[in-house]
Amino acid sequence: MEFDRTQSAGYLGNVMARLLTRALHMEIEDYGLAPAQFMTMVEIWRDPGVTQRLLVDRLGVEQGTMTNTLARMERDGFIVRRPHETDGRAQTVHLTKKAQEILEPTILGAIRSNEAALGCLTDTEREQFLDLMQKVIECLRAHVNGPHDSSGEN
Image 1 (cartoon, helix red, strand yellow):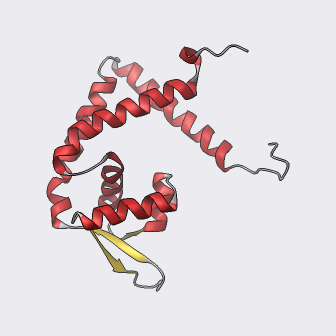
Image 2 (cartoon, rainbow, N blue to C red):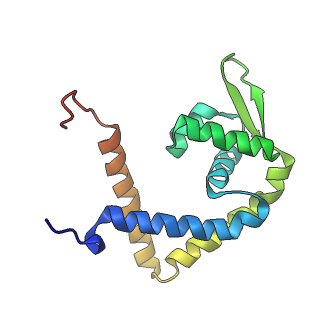
């Protein structure tokens, strides 16, 4: 059996994801944020008062991962949690003033890291690349979240 990593979407996607994460980290580390915290902060900014469950669904992470991310963000003064108005079991998540103050410069850092990644592409290539990435993500979501039988075969 042969395996050519240069033709493997999984291998190339993994390398690209690690490099993109490293580039983002370099841009935002001075603000005390890790890339996962940045993604979470942006989602809370887009939807103030979002619940942890919605963050898990929207960001595609495990419940435990989100619990740890939010705990660190709360410890570092980036978020506050409040009781949900109608669901006594849930809490809503809100950005603090500290988080709001670093939102713009960290978003600019994310834009710079994206530009570093895509700057070698023409406008047409960039649009095609991003469209194809979204299409692949949709395919993978359908595969991962699709129906599975008990035999382990799809």
